Image (tube, rainbow, N blue to C red; front, side, top):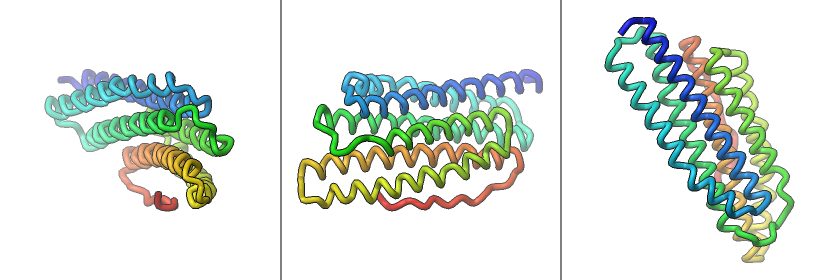
Length: 224
């Protein structure tokens, strides 16, 4: 395999990674929208579409392993292939969290919401933006943008911490029905916080891929 062919296949892998990232972002968007609208059909559609993300992730993994087997990559190329492999796993996990949100939506059903959904959609939009930026910096090898994604995670953590405290008040309210729904919303908030963490993982990996150095990032969120 020539270096030209190798780099062409590397480019193709990155394009597939962007395809997987776009599918994961759409799944998150639809899952949160279905919760806001209590659209159970839309939530079910998110669940039904998860197999496509799994397929893309598996195909990327197989192609990366083939490239490693057929060519002895240089150190930098090997870092890139490793980053693609790990990022595909992160994106597949994002898809899983979208599926989890849809499951919580179906559990709540048409039951009146205990509070207006403000922070959850805000967390979702912020997490989605982080996901887009993390993939953008991956393709462009943009360390500055990658660092921005890492920094943006703190704002998501802060919203989550505030929402956690608010929902815990519902849990301890003594109203069983209210408490049960609050627990479901706590799970949704946690899933969104984890999606932001996966975007941060991708950004940290970009910094390593370009510079060869890992950065230390601390997640400050309550246990849930």
